Length: 314
Image (cartoon, rainbow, N blue to C red):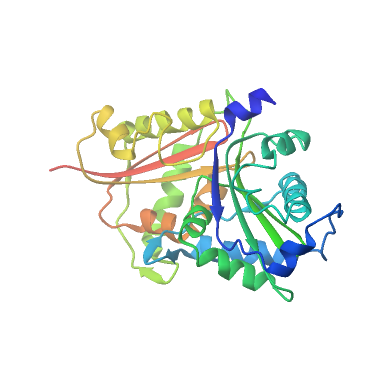
């Protein structure tokens, strides 16, 4: 337990916590938790991922498209334990705020290891649908921002009676070494083929752009970040030392007028699948199609890929 709590990073979100008088009164006495009919997990995942893959606005601030989330059954079990506990303690309106439920213990019990986790809660009236839940979540600024964070890859939602629990998590991923080789020629060919044809990135059309050439300095910056993600089991454009793309590029001595970065993660990723995935994501696609970029480098460390674009300073 101590080890998991040392790793535990939890942001509490109260985006709809309401208790009616009748529900609060019903909480007296020893009442067992009663799980309500199951949620449509596939629909919830589809609705949230529609926002992620297309980009969305959170309280007036636009968030770029990010890779879709995956439903995780281990998180779903932990979320169900959590919502059951909230129902059981529904007469105690401070239960969530005071940390009445041991989420770290629940995640350990289901064997889910993570680097960060976000938990959100809501309560509803009868007839509350999956569409209502997603709309409520996306209308809350903090919850919307977390849903659009590229740091999270897994999610689950559970409901007990009127109480909903949503968990977003970044899984702790095992390290994979000695698999860093990539086909540079194929990557250049795939990227330049897309650039030469033009592409629609989300709702924005990009006309054909000139080819990019391979740059070893940009590749070095990409390798630094892929190594960092692999060594420290995270997936983000921000390095474990809080470095930005600009920091990493400056460190290797590349003098630029403009730069951009794409990242990808996956055990079965190939050069073709990585580029295809980037082209199917509007934000990543826009980087690939930017006419201002003239050079590119790509590197992999284990399951983590980094692509860095640049235009040298004249």
